[in-house]
Image 1 (cartoon, rainbow over the protein chains, first blue to last red):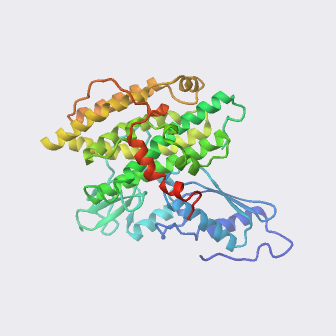
Image 2 (spheres, rainbow over the protein chains, first blue to last red):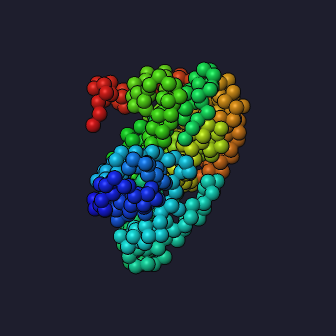
Image 3 (cartoon, one colour):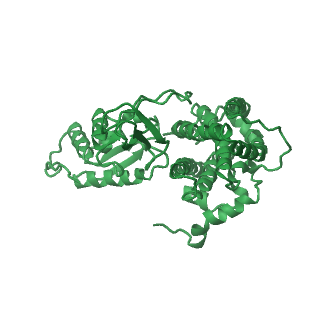
Length: 179
Length: 261
């Protein structure tokens, strides 16, 4: 946890809210996703808002990814710890259910990091809820960049991933599901 | 997130609490059944598929039970409601408490419920109860993914070998009668539907029936005829299987009340 400490709150003059919030976003940018440590919680798109108060307190809105994802509780703890270590106190985290988190919220930076890490990022935007049987998107192999890949398993090692194989380099790889 | 509940009449509170339990218990009990299969599915991919589906369902149940506890206003938490109720207080349809059979049997049960939850969640997104609408909108994305999985397996097994076809048809014939209570609308529920809180079940049934017919056609399976039916889990009248499931699921909280880790 590499919190950025720049002395806020040590004197009688407090930086304006916007500056505190910007610093909080910076700290959150260093908080890793517990399942995919190459992503920060900001990359993942789960931080919905950050609001600084008059007395140094901070409220963070957190959107859970999957309803049952065990990482959600860990993310919450890590967010609170990182912000406290950076001098914010008290820190409250509220769950934001609506609108629901979607893989479309993964940042462009996050998508690049995922692919570099060996996990194919979501290959398409999430469609309308009524569309049940849309054709499978073409997923690019994160190792050899071939588009010639096939799904091995609809579900993978974490709720957010499916398992694929590249038909050219023959390596299996994980794919971040579109949901 | 605000709900419109504070000013609601006691009868409405009771009806909403009951309805939330129906939704929550359907996910909770099915999640528990699928959880029993961890390490026992025919292949690791299916083990992951069923376990991940179970995880989503239990997550949905937690959101719903927490909300139900708040509405009831007697201080019961999601854990109280999940682990310390008696069998007759559960409101899940008897379909989801049916024991696991072979993989095809598990898939048939899953398709019937996934399609039901898909229609329910789709319509509940527009509920006048904003918190329920938010939970449904979130669950809908997951439910859609579940039905893609279970539906594609139903088609593969039904339109597969002679053996797989015969076995899923037999499971379908056995489980079909349990679908009847899914659309058994009670007075309290009808009142909630008229108030725009929940969808009208006749509407849900029409969509469900169309979707199921389409899947059965593609899977070359026969839709069974309607037969008399006695169990109404949504009113607390369960088959004998729920008690055994609860004995397993509630063991820890009953033996060590308040245990945390």
